[in-house]
Amino acid sequence: MKRFDFDGDSIALDFLNTVSGMRGVESKENLQSWADLAEWARQAKLARTAPHGSQAAYQQAIAIREALHDVIRAAVEQRDPPAPSLAAVNAWIADALAHRHLRPAGGGRFTLEFDRDDAPLAFLRPVAAEAADLLQVHLDLVRICGESEVGRCGWLFLDKTRNHSRRFCSMKDCGNRAKQRRFQQRKRML
Figure 1 (cartoon, rainbow, N blue to C red):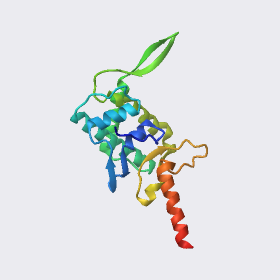
Figure 2: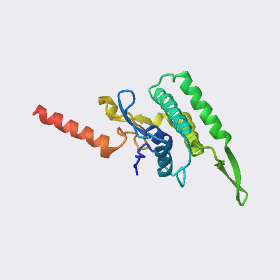
Figure 3: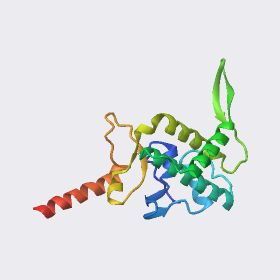
Figure 4: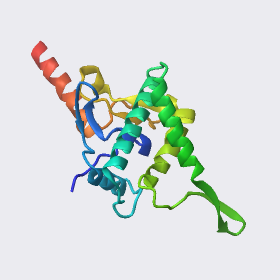
């Protein structure tokens, strides 16, 4: 069973981070099939069991993920997103939110829940809602891993540290690699 990393502090960013390395340079697709996507959904606690789907649904999920990446990355870099990517993300978010309804929770209270239907990508609806929230409210906390400066990691994460000083997607991987590189550079200078 493939293990996925959830270091983005946001399920929307964790979805984007299913591509390792730097997109377009040296990247590795971690969702290579519907089975991988279904296992990611299970590990992300978006589905209790691995959802059933098809190759077409898998390709749609990957297209959505890449469009969302284009939009969030452009926003973080303070530039306009590509129009087709923004249109795809808007359609995905609108569809997801159309499937969210108030349900009585007892005692005069309500919960806002997503429909539980047979749509193959229904498990991605909470990801769409969080992506909308991220783009609207928390965009100033989205960071690109510091290892992107040396072309090693393009992962995005939500910086929830008190002083907003988090630099790496993961200290155990990228942060450690950066420390080792700095140590080697200092050693060479001696």
